[in-house]
Amino acid sequence: MKHVVITGSSAGIGLGLAREFLRSGFSVTISGRKEEKLKTAKELLKKDSSEEHIQTKICDVKSIPDIKALWDAAYERFGRVDIWVNNAGIGQDYKFITDLEEDEINAIIDINVKGVIFGSRIVTDQMEKQGFGALYNMEGFGSDGRTMVKLGVYGTSKSAVSYFTKSLIKETKNSKIIVGLISPGMVI
Figure (spheres, rainbow, N blue to C red):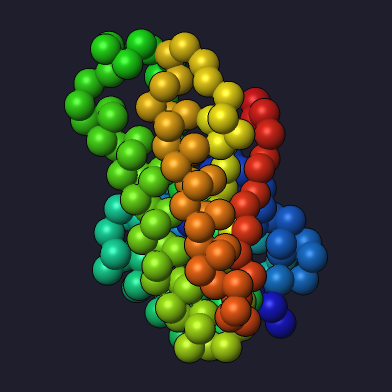
């Protein structure tokens, strides 16, 4: 059975992806920063599949050791990671850049940009060792070059994800790994 790992999947797009992968016959490992949210997500997913096909793991994508531990737990439980989706991300309050606090800016950049870079770094290395796999990074507003007032930092983070992933595609072109972008479009 194929297996997918999705970061930031205790709610939103990540949880929706996990549900659809389960419905398509995959095993899933979902992750997030809060145990209680992961427990709730697992209960929702059990409506679509048996518990044996669902694993949860705490992971803060700002932490390389957490990402490595997520890979290790997923690989140990299911014996392979066919697909990894770097989905974890946060939005921005609709504010001018001058009104954003330093911790808000740091969180957006740390999670949306560094989290993708750290995840991609660990996963491409492990998939090379495994001999196969697909890595997908989640785009968002700004990844296509569009700009909007009061979304400057978020848009910058998603523009960086797009650039980084396109560079990673070139770096891995001669490997057995597939690297790509997912563009979910407007999410309400």
